[in-house]
Length: 430
Ligand code: SF4
Ligand code: SF4
Picture 1: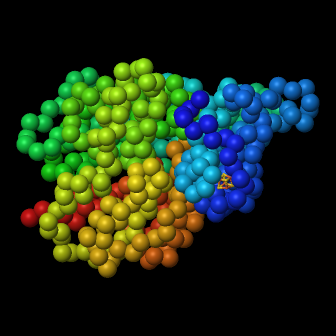
Picture 2 (picture 1 turned 90 degrees about the horizontal axis):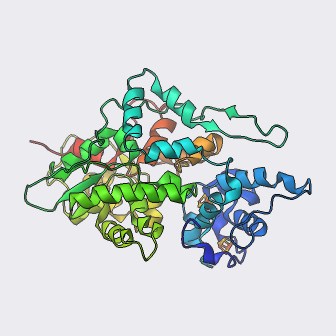
Picture 3 (picture 1 turned 120 degrees about the horizontal axis):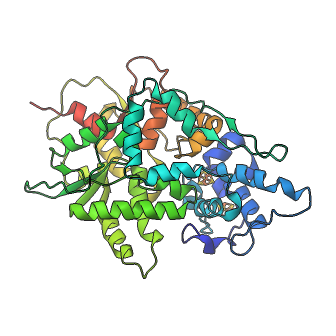
């Protein structure tokens, strides 16, 4: 069982409220891919204890695994449905649980990906190695974009497919070095702030983490030994891997003895807050995970809490900005008031808000469902056009990746920035 939400499987009253907020249903209009449809499919074919009933001699039922697989993969894990459901159905959790069920073995994410994510040595070494190879974007995304499309006709056939969002960045050559165990100690006065990087800021966009450090006046330590937060594994129902990753990170973050743990990724912050669910009451790590969860802040939350916004901002600001609110910030971290409030203070009349909807990234979702991810993202691009803003700002690494990849064709003058980069860029450093 992936988490604690399975006790709500029988509560759907088919009201349809979830249909209006589901980004996948919005672009497909397939009832089966709607939250309500997924609920029905999952509860019809999953009996007590999440046992799929696909091992049937009935030829009709032989189609079940592929159909179930498609349905389960067609979820961004945005959490919007659970947020609006009047009956309290936690559909995103139900999907995670079903993804983790035994029958999907072989149809889900390749195991070697989890092994790489779990390895403290392999992931940084591989990143360093591959970042030295020209045009790594193509290689990396071809490797990760490996899709297992096993069909009944040819169960052993594998199809390799490049995600349609082709403008993925290459790995950065100057990612943080987090291989060695040890401590980083900052003895300056004031609150001790530890930075949790997450994979994307470590390997793709270290400049975002560097901007965050500058925003806090350099008074930030980067605990060694940290790694992937576990969100991709958790979303795929790979609970054991998520727990192993949580254990590694808890050790690293505990060693830092920080007052606050800040991350520039709303998805990482959300996952850190859920680590305690991975441990039983008897495990000592549960209380450690709760303590860490209490210290974690998404970047804009900590800027507001510590009043760390620069007093003076550069007067030379011709830009207009809008904000893309990450789903994990909206539904798991208490909303976007801090981020939008900071933009309002910084840009006032030049801050042009846009509607809050999913960008379609969803971790492994955009790799496994490139066409769906693109259709969802196109709607965000239109929303950006409607605002007329020149810069779109966000506070989640996955969203940043999706926006930069999906808007790479946009004309000069249009930018996608993390909020930390924006604050850093417009701070008056004189
Ligand atoms: S909002 Fe909840 S109760 Fe209504 S259809 Fe969706 S899952 Fe069922
Ligand atoms: S979590 Fe998001 S994508 Fe998945 S079913 Fe719910 S609303 Fe749709």
